[in-house]
Image 1 (cartoon, rainbow, N blue to C red):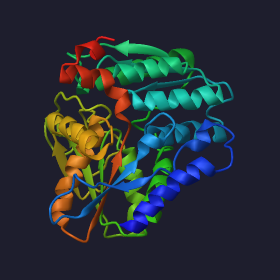
Image 2 (cartoon, helix red, strand yellow):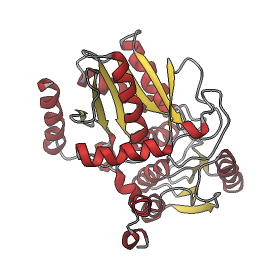
Image 3 (cartoon, helix red, strand yellow):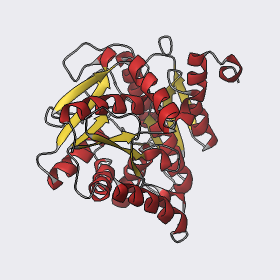
Amino acid sequence: MSSLLNQSANTCENKLTSKHPHDILQCIGNTTLMPLRNIVPRNGARILLKLENENPTGSMKDRMALAMIEAPETDGRLQPGGAVVEYTGGSTGVSLALVCAVKRHPLHIVSSDAFAREKLDHMRILGATLEIIPSESGRMTEKLTRDMIAAAGVVAAKTGAYWTDQMKNTDQLAAYTKLADEIWAQTESKIDAFVQSVGTAASLRGTSERLRQHNSKMKIIAVEPAESAVLSGGAPGAHKIDGIGAGFVVPLWHDKVADQIEQVTTEDAISMAFRLAKEEGLFAGASTGANVTAAFRVAEHLGPGATVVTIMCDTGMKYLHSYAARLGWAEIALL
């Protein structure tokens, strides 16, 4: 444990003392891996959390956004100054807006009022043009996902913009290979299970494939909303966990990606996010709450001596208004 704590401190120090980056995009990645101290099962495995909130926009999606732009720039699919279009629940859009701002690509985002207002505002501030698709009572559904995808396709066809199309884009997998290598090095090869929620499935697929190259016995656990457990064979439904649970089996998913699937309710995910803030000082979104809830279950099953790694997907600062409304803090929710 002490070596991991020293490593975490060194990671933070290296970010502060490294040579001046050429631009903000060079600050993506090399995030801290930190053990949970209080949210741990009795006689269970230790749980390590990869702090992806340390990325420039506060989200792990910075990794994939950079990969989805640099690959087509390299092979000519995206020309200098060429326009980009994407559908997104928020974090991918913010990350793409950052990358496109730095690289000078006009960006058109299709999103929805179902997602955190902070994310939509952040995209606009970074220069993106937004098209907002109305939701059913602010909930994520299969229909909403498909409507957003269709709208992005219309924009791409009309304007000739490069469509990153995150649900089908395999360029992003390379970004998660790097994430897996970071985890492997930071744990000093001592990792028994990896837990991650499924949105496009790219992060779980890319990370797990690389981790299994390091250790073929690695246990991989997928996480999905219990209200829309389609990967487990259930019916699509509505939920409020931003960034995961599209409502259908996404193209990048296949049955061999994970060894098991954990279902987590929206209520449990948000409750765990609040626990992380109060008990660990880690302010995260609901997808992180879902990850830690599932990781806790896995840690209970594996028992002492094992190590479970999961992801802090983003910062809770992206959800201030929705959290405030949930807690009844009207003066913040109405700002």
